[in-house]
Picture 1 (tube, helix red, strand yellow):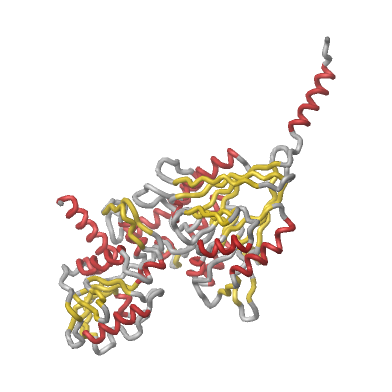
Picture 2 (cartoon, one colour):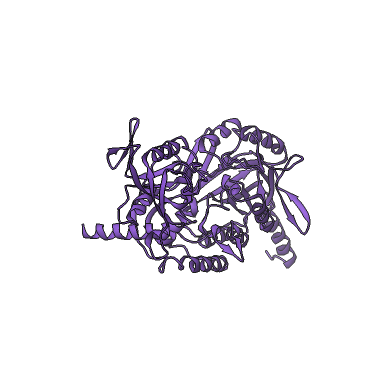
Length: 508
């Protein structure tokens, strides 16, 4: 039988139309980060790095053009870079926005650390960002009322939404609308921020959006216990991408999946999702991917990171000649997370205070640093470099040697205990509390004795402990170190102490 060209053409049209017919099914991918403060790799270059994340991002886009990139809060602060000055102005997260702009983030949530920066600096970062933000429960306080945060570009204000909607379309024409809700933990009270009840606002924002979309997801920055409560309140959420905890977890409450990656992009979550419009069935397949040195650096994002890292290296080299040298290795995480560091004696606080004593050849009776000086809000593990120590103590400052009356020292120590949960909580070396007594070098504190104490110079300014300053009559003398001395910069003291500990371990 002879088949004419016209018949072949007709058959091909039928085949093409059948191949491209809308099957009402669609697949899409979410790439989730949370709690990212460092744009470059950490732990001696072993883990993290936003340019590596971008390589993963681009690979996922090749796999499926319907790929979205998210950050579930906490990125403007804390960071070592953010504390530095460029052209007379502190960076305050500008470097992070610059990198995130290059990566084309699809949506970010507010985290509590976004409010570490001033209202003025936060507004600058909002204006500079080319990606959308979302939050249902944080608002900007003005004299008249609480209003949504906003971006202002060329004099035009664009409000941050309580919800976010994205339309997706696949190759065969299947279209869906997906919605997002977001809330932030009210753990960072500021005069310019109003926090609404996160559970009330989560449920209200879900109710406001659910009939306008096919499916709703969560992008939150709260404790996992809060996420679980939200999951119970809104059982139809298939996935909550969360932040705040800093260590990866994947929990389920009923059918609601709650996923959190490790801080500083040590890991990311990849969620491959399929949705059937006919049955309303949704399937989420999640992969926790480690971001390590085996992943290539994306060239475009790498250039942006390198620009900021050059600024950082120049500043650090003013204090430490070899900032990338591995000075210490630990498999036990050194805990600098905000909550522990402001409420308990951590191993990182112990290292810092031991280093303070070491900087004076251990000729002091004890050493004290306020938890608020430790700004990393993360754990250090593996290879530790001077850069990591600068991340821990970004503001630096001297270690001062103080002769102080025992009575005042007791008041200071008691105040530090009462300040648990705040930056005035004190980390201590050669000081223990046994029942009701303070022990200095295993001897009961004597109120009439004169003690020699190594303090961080910040503590002697009276900001955290109002009665502790060189103006107090029971502060008998204060020695301020010279620039040539190890105690002139607390970061240098910690670096040299860890180097010594490494040498001791090698000998042992």
